[in-house]
Length: 456
Ligand SMILES: Cc1ncc(COP(=O)(O)O)c(C=O)c1O
Image 1 (tube, rainbow, N blue to C red):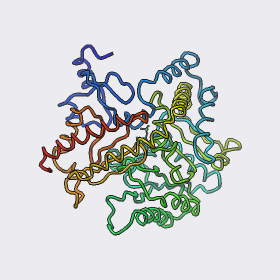
Image 2: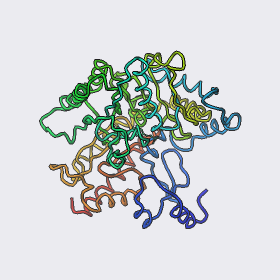
Image 3: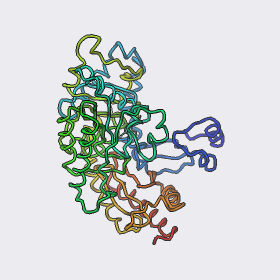
Image 4: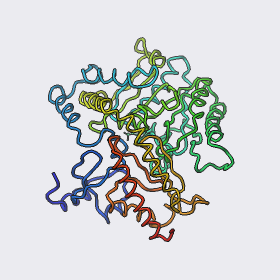
């Protein structure tokens, strides 16, 4: 239902709502944008205008908006058994969904620990990694290696290995754990050495992880954590050699490999899970977002058989870690209904197919003065926005440029994130026509912006 008195809503939000990461002065001046309903890949703002949800919310509404089937499954479960002590008791949908997740994840990733979101999934993985080594008699393996520009979550452990420009550890350095090191991100566009091929550059990035492990002492390193393709680092797609090399390095030095699939999982890159592109099975895989397409808050950390093996035994082996809403019955019901839709409609195949079309349409804009690079895998694409192609100067450094683009996009009815990059991650149900329409709106907005700021 659209709000009857939008002024009251603004007043309530501005007086009482603390919105994540929002610049207060901007909110105070421009107010809060409200959405009132959504259907498929479209979303309606409170002023009655429909637009494209080009980011699938926060890269998660994979099966699209308005799926009655999931709503009904959640409602039915809430009506029958809405909650039971998740530490001590199981529930049918959660057990069934654990089996479903295990059947979809690659290799022997068979043991599923449910959480209420991605940060908790990462927190769970980091703690499992530490206790895994502890249980094996290597309690000194306490360090974690992450990568520059990655984002793994907002809780203390996850944030300690996060340095994404938007949400990173820098502002909280003083209160965060310091048992971490950062390796380079295989983000080829801004490589320092222009003479390197993508393969050479990616391999060097993997080798840098090994150098850090050796420098720190392999007996002190618990795990390496990385996204298959880092969204926060601007959709940094590595060369095919990168992931097998990283797997090999971790194996040789006894460190666990954690693949953070919170964004890349559940079809986003054209495979069920991003790691399948490289045939690499991580020791731990974290996921959230598309696991229920946002119809219920769920995350998970999935472990290989060999990892779980170390937690079998008496109390001294037990993984002591629990989350009240991890394994919520309605989350299991939402996950099962979401997976059923994805399988029935082959949304993973659609992501691969439509992702190619989206990338092609964006590639066709390379001649634009503000387009420095175009990257993507499946329905996860980024356009690098620059004001000077040669110098690779971010467009965001030109005062007002990104704001102008955002305004034009809003006028055109395309909701995407534009900053250092313009990101596209629509629901996997997007049609060919909708891909064409969204990219056309983007190109119009870009052209208008380039003219307005004197680039064209
Ligand atoms: C790769 C990655 N890991 C972890 C998280 C944290 O997930 P959540 O916001 O559900 O806690 C995010 C969130 O965007 C993410 O992108």
